[in-house]
Structures are given as structure tokens and as C-alpha cells.
Image (tube, rainbow, N blue to C red; front, side, top):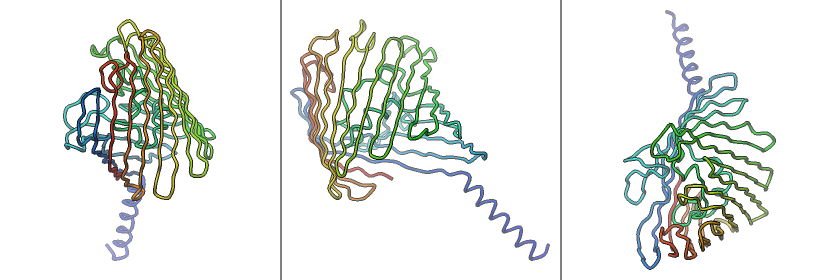
Length: 337
């Protein structure tokens, strides 16, 4: 073998390795979010260190050619205050990928998803509005209710589809399979539908989910002008047999939020109100939060907030005790990687 031939073969090997690397990628990512808080639930007060949906994950894609790609996401929650595993979405023991575990195929047709993932109807509405701490921790939205996610089916055993972007509009649909699981209750599949539309400073969203005769529907809007961002969502619920065995009836729920940015500082305020369930007397509640974030970098911030849930005498949001209120003053650090 001549020297020139060896050089040519080496060059081809390098080109082949480079091409293979270009066709696939794997990324490690995560977030550590921890607060020191003084909480009060009913008449009981406690100070402590709290996790705010910390997680780490691995995501990857492979270019299959012809515009077709394969992808996956594996995401594990953990308690940043203790280092133990955190299930978040459904019961597990130790470290697991219970936050998200999906494989997908995407191309010009959109994306087909299989596995365990959070309902897109939630991301399209409630999650988008809680801007101060990404709807995590003690200040997360306590009033939003999803009968599929919270009613037993959780986020697992799902088949989903996402359309390609159509002039700023994307639509997601999924079905959660009950698999004759005896712990689910009524053996019925759950359905989730979401739409997102973005154009310049305007962002709109809608979500719907249903299992049996239990359903929720929500609309969201968010607009940014200059240093100010305003957002709101409205949700309508119908409960047939989840909140109570005979059904809690129907209710309306809404949330308003505002953010003002000044350099590295963000000033936040939001308020939510859930009307009473039609079959549960005095079950209305209000939640409000004031917050401040200071961004040390694009990935790290320090922050503080005060949040309070005011329960009517028939409501038990957060506390689990009818008529008992909840509040928390928190200081925290969040780092993304």
C-alpha cells in the first residue's frame, strides 16, 4: 500500500466519522432549583429547604435522511434538597425517567411520539402564564385541574402526534391508554388536544382533555410590549366522578399575570381565582403571588416570592383541609445546564 493510498484511506475514515457525528447528536441537560422557605398551612408554620422541580435529562436525534429524524428524551426528577429521586408525575421508587421517556419520529409530516410526557394542553395554557418560577414549587398554579393527568392516567402510556408549523400554528393530539390498569378507576382512555399560535409579540394557546365524562378546556393569551409582558388563561372544568364519587359538577378558573423587566431584574405579579364547584358549597379559592428575579446569567438566577392561597370554607387547595389557607415566603437559586 502506497503512502498516498494510506493518506486517502485515513481521510475517508475521518470524513466518515465526521458524517456519522453530524447525523446524530445526544445532549445532557437539566435544572437545579432550590428554595429556602417559611410556609404556613392552616395554623401550622414550618421553615425548610425545598425542591422546585429539579431535573436532569438526555435528549438525542438521528438524521435518517430524506427529511426523516428519530429522536428520544429521557428525563429524571430529583429532590435538590436531599438528592433523592422525585417522581413528579406518577409514583416511582428511586431515580427514574418518570418525568419524561419518549421516542419519536419527525419529518415533513410532523412528529409521532410514543411514551411518557406531560400533556401539551397544560403547556399551551397554564404553564405558559406562570412566568416567575416556571410553574414550580410552592408558588405553582394550585387551581388548574386536568382530569387525565391528575385523575389516574397520569402522563404515561401515550401515543401523540404534532403537526408541522403552519404559519406559526402547531397542533398536538394524544391518547393515554388505560391498559386495563386496576389502579386507574374507570377503564377509559384519556384524550388531550392542544394548539399554539405565535406571531411577533402575540402568543395564543388552547387546550382540551377528557377521560370518560370528566373534561377541561382552556384558552390562553400572552402579549409583550416593550418591557412589559401580560398573560391570562381561562379554564372550564366538568367533573363527573373524580373530585367526589358523585361528581363535583362544573366550575370556572382563571389566572392573570404580569412581568416587567429592567436590565437583569424581573418584577412579577399574578392572581388566579377558581369559582366554586357547582356541587360543592363554598369551594371557591384565590391564589396570588408577588415575585422578583435577578438574572445573573442566561442560565442562573436568584429570586424571591410571596404566594398565598385563600380557601373558602369548603375548599382545600394545597392544604388538603377544608377552609385552611396556605402561604409561603421563599428565596431561591435556579441554574440551568
